[in-house]
Image (cartoon, rainbow, N blue to C red; front, side):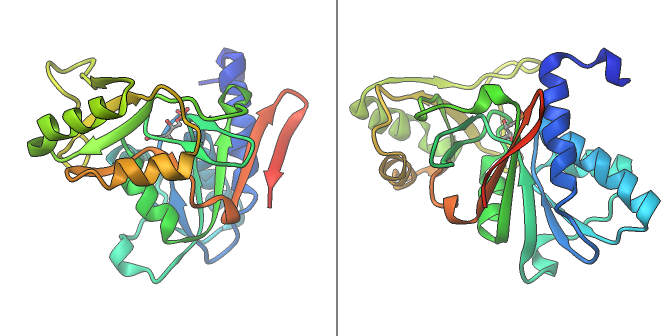
Length: 234
Ligand SMILES: O=C(CO)[C@H](O)[C@H](O)COP(=O)(O)O
């Protein structure tokens, strides 16, 4: 797509995504997130690989990213082949003032959390619409299919509303890359993101939810503002 065809929001994503690619240097192992914003980072990395002979290996967080990087020719390694990941670049759905996140619109948050945890540093790329004073939800939750009635019961006891995410091009529930079901849970309020994350993640059957509150100490956020990328955090 040419630059003139991009919407204003896509241009903002592009500014953030391109800026993040500058953080990558030769020899790095790079966690590659999922979604439309980090897709711009991957496109820029491909250019740097060709122009500067940049040598990197990516660790993908989803089948979508694996397919995109394959098409771009970015070399990949599996998590089992690396000790640690130098930097992960990923998107987010909501970012609060303390850099806590909600992720999982793309149903990739289980692998994204594993890669984030294995990374020395995390760079979150986003357009300005993702910034918020406080996280509000909905919170994506990946669950083992067998546990569906039990998890629905437990979340109902907590209040709020829950939807089993359904496919756009598929009848029935969305199935994640891990073969699981995705719920979208709208709590009444999120007073303490870390506490709610822990409570949800402890429900038997939940693989993990999309609140990412434990990575703020190693997170940089890049917002693709109109005047140029704004860096928040480290
Ligand atoms: O969490 C995610 C996928 O599970 C994405 O990173 C998040 O939804 C942001 O996507 P986009 O950059 O397309 O807005």
